[in-house]
Image (tube, rainbow, N blue to C red):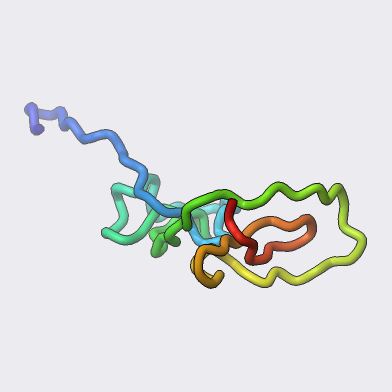
Length: 105
């Protein structure tokens, strides 16, 4: 609503889904500050140049199973980057030293 020199704006609404894995580290330049500034189907996520609009990743139902790994003996490469890279109802879960597709609980 425009009220002379004042402008009322709806509160920022967070969109469903998550940012792609590995894009959550803050950087120097922001191209957006909230999801409402991004086109449909994307979220405002931290990326290499700062916060930018990226296509969201749909999160699968359920949770990752609990893991009891306290430390890593050997570095292992991630076998997934997000739920969308896992088959069926499997989720991309932290598994101690890496991420892997595990059956959701």
